[in-house]
Image 1 (cartoon, helix red, strand yellow):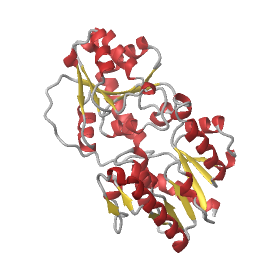
Image 2 (image 1 turned 120 degrees about the horizontal axis):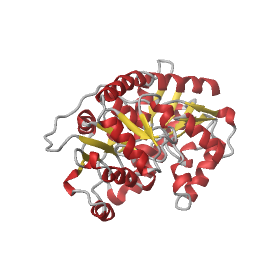
Image 3 (image 1 turned 135 degrees about the vertical axis):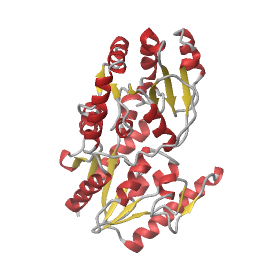
Length: 358
């Protein structure tokens, strides 16, 4: 069974969850699947370090030449379609051109409905585009049951062609030691967009003297603090040195998971919540929102709070962070929960869906 993954995500992302998913998915199929990532030119880190990078051309920056890179990739994809005639085209992102004219069955993965829920007006055209793609697809894969529920509520998609396949993480647990001079800390990871609810997490930290007097709040990734964020810290009367920012690669991130007292995930909405599993993998106790997909993915291996209630956030953090037995229990439960997720399982379940439609 020949499966083509198109080039789109590998020219959009240097790093990122979607491209990591596609590469790991493709690398863990059984011998019954012959996968190809059809991207003549790419900038993606995960593809570069995969078995698929042979005969493909990696670039760092192309500037205004990017339109020619995209044209070359589209031409190459069309050429390979005619030459190799795959059984399946698995779309890597929402790009209608990737479906092309082909008798191959079409598969698309829906990751989340963040644009629909929080940025509808800004992404109205792309949302309409997604609607057409769902209609054309022979199989729609959702990465959580919560995402499937939201998809069926938002779009008129035949439920019989929508399935759930959970994601996974790489579990090596390797980290790079870093020299940091900070107190025991609460870890926050990733972007700080509105739906990530970073503001309420910081307000909860500032409101509790038990937290702000004895712990630091570390943000990893997401870019340096904005002026609005700096103003927020000032208005909350937080000692500025109590809030730290670091960035780096995955080895650096694993170090901070490993060193953190707890990991907080206050987001209002996610499609899956990969950081939950990343933290558990590094023996970092998890506390997170009680909304969206979090209880589905974390199960009983996390403490939950109401993300709209600052008092609830502060109370649950205080209760967890000073309880050594509870922290130890969450670490053990995290490892047990993690065993439910693997790339082999993800690839095998996806492979079964391919077989169902050809």
